[in-house]
Image (cartoon, rainbow, N blue to C red; front, side):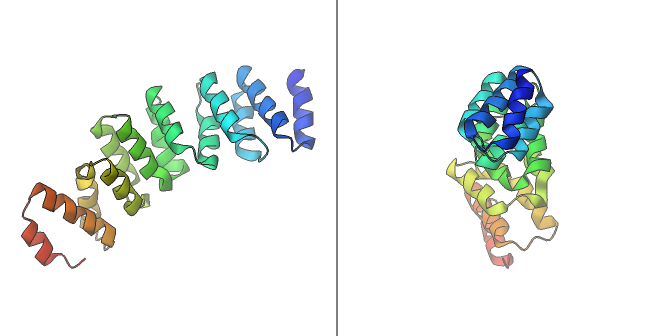
Length: 190
């Protein structure tokens, strides 16, 4: 009965508190589809409060939390939550299907959380050409982990990438690892 009352107020209201209370009530009563719908459709809730509420609720389905964090720029928080709660398939789903453009932020947070490199590498390779290279390189360089991208960058080059960011990042890796940098510098036109 309470959910129905709140739902009717929700339809007519732009009050962030009413929208938040609906999200909170639906989460507490396990109505995940409803939480997912409201977090996807409503523009009238406090995103920070909703994020905190959903993290504390520890729902078995992360889609509502993904909606909030993706829409309102909490991608590192989302990644940290999913990783520390062993919800790796949701991380994969997020970067592969929801927003590949945010994969660099996800990778950066996974590196900060000391996630195994094999998972990060497979995640990067699963997104491949949908992944924005320049911000990915920046996130890895900030953490002194550029070499993590070697296989991914080599794969892009073998596919014919002419993106200067791909070639510059690969150049840095080759020079840092001292793997015949003279040859790369004299033969790579990019």
